[in-house]
Length: 142
View 1 (cartoon, one colour):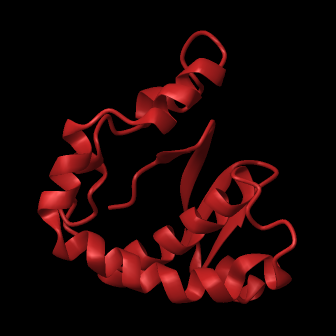
View 2 (view 1 turned 180 degrees about the horizontal axis):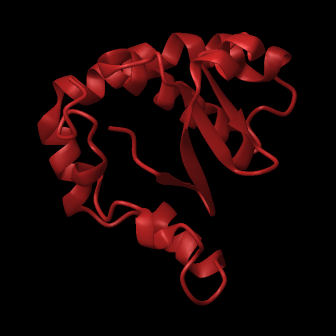
C-alpha cells in the first residue's frame, strides 16, 4: 500500500496511484510532477516494484527540491536509476539503521522546521510520523 503523501525537504508531495492506461500512454512506470508536487506510480507496479518505483520518483523530487538536478545531464535519470534499487535494498536489509533514524534528531529536519510557514502544511495530517511508519515492508510490500 503506497503512502498518500511524503515530505521531501520543505515540500509535501501527494502520492497517487496511476491508472495503467495513463502510465502506458506516457511511456513511464512512475512520474514526479514537480509543478504540482505529485508523485504517481503505475497501478501495474506491486510489491518490490512499487516500492522501488516510488523511491525512484522520490529521488527525482529530492533532486528537484535540493536543486541537485541543475547542471546534470538528463536531470539525473542515469544516477537515480542506479541508486534507487541499491538504496531500497539496503533500506530493507538494515532494519537497525531505520530504527536508529527514529531515535536521532536531524539537523536537516530542524532547518526545515525553521524555514517552513507557521501551521500545518496541507498534506501533513496524512503523513507518517516516523520512518518506521513509512517503511514499505511494514506495509506489506515486501
